Length: 81
Image (cartoon, rainbow, N blue to C red):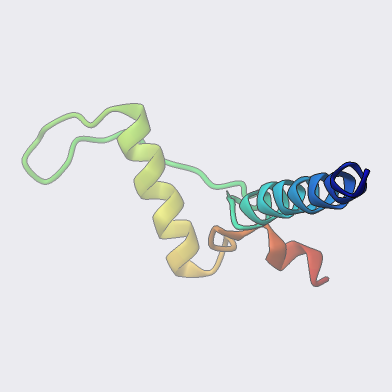
């Protein structure tokens, strides 16, 4: 009988630990704030034509560096207001 009563609190502790672990994982995921930026399709200095993904990533980094866009951050930063 005593073992039966001890089991539910252990299950509650395990469940709470699992919920906290998932919430912690979710909180530290990187989010990219909404940002509108433009890019011009051109070759690089060596004349190589870069892919759209490369050009977009470069334009995004330039927008962050210039202050037009907010840098990516952990999700929990948004929860603080």
